[in-house]
Image (cartoon, rainbow, N blue to C red):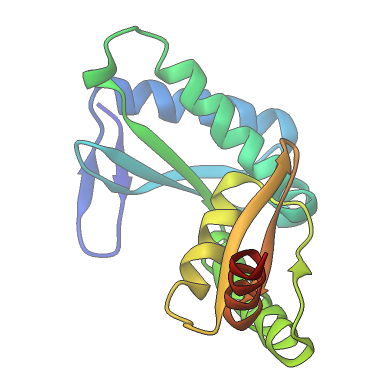
Length: 177
């Protein structure tokens, strides 16, 4: 049975995890020879694989699209069976990219929310995948001065940030007529 080294403990891979490890290793090796794959976390519902000794730029791609595609393919190939209860989500990361991207998106969202508040109008963000849009919505959820919603069709879907004062004004204008 394959094992993966973690800083604190050794993770034993079950048959499904072993299959995921083999599939991901083949995908990554075809993109970047010499890259290594290790599992850093696993529980019943999901597992995290970390790629090392690879060129991060090639594996990540523009805005993480290549990394997202690798993760999507991995989950598609490993979770082929129709039994939904046995499905497990596999996350793929390289050099802590996903955490850095999350922090970057939160900062970007807050900066754009400040612009929306200052100008008093809506601000449209660039096109994002569903995971990134959710991070933006969550980052601004606690800000009472703005509201967010998504518009468009995949893959051209984006988050719109709207000052709540404008939303209230729009409602009042509807009531006046």
